[in-house]
Length: 311
Ligand code: C5P
Image (cartoon, rainbow, N blue to C red; front, side, top):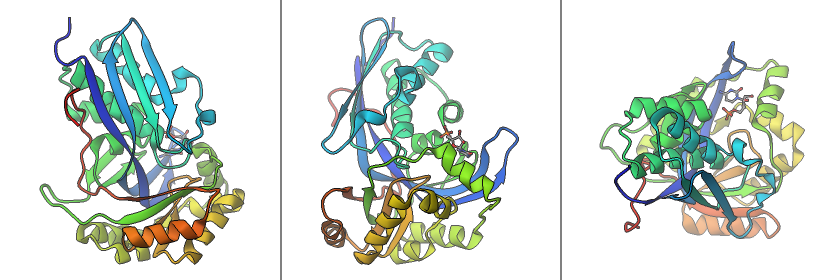
């Protein structure tokens, strides 16, 4: 028998990559990366309840979100996260997982990875599993390259395959968030295809200058510094192969934003802006027909699951 709450909730935040350097090919087929990743306020809401005799995942879409790209349940990262905790730690066999999707699927915003991280946190709390944080990060890495960073929360530098994460801010420090507009052209880009395009072109994309400047800009809360240093080594190839992403980026630029970048492997694009009102202006100029949202970064956030009575 397990004690503790019977319901847990968690907000699974989307992310952007302010820098993404592809440093080398690995023997396991993945690439060694270095990326400054920061969560944003936009989040899927997850509710996990101890119920039934299997893992049931129910996904609902917020307005404007297309659930068409969701695959079979066994490929769902949230389902796999719960399964992993059952197999390794004897988490409850009966779990009902409800996910309200606000993050576009397959959009380079880490939605599926955030959901997996959220389920790891929620199930551990629900079943009062005492899993050391280093083990949680290792479990997260088994699920996907972005999951450790999102499980950690806050602005992080991710390295290796994505399995090594270090916070950008010093312990106890905070930093002003950046406002941004997220936009998605209504297509999805497969992450492995984006890396394959990069590999075929032979181009590894170290950019230590961008890394250094971005890290110090995040620490200072300097959005202009961050906008000047934005860098994504996958961007050029994805822009060439998926022209919708390039034209969306061009529209965001001409709408007067401070800096525009492909988010992760795309297809979403983000534009840094000087504040909320500036973001609303840029968003208005983008016009209808494109999913977009004004949001802000969470440089010093943490991912935490809550009991049923907490907000
Ligand atoms: O780990 P994840 O499932 O998110 O990765 C999706 C795909 O992206 C991988 O199959 C791989 O092709 C590519 N990838 C990579 N190097 C990384 C992360 C992802 O090549 N560090």
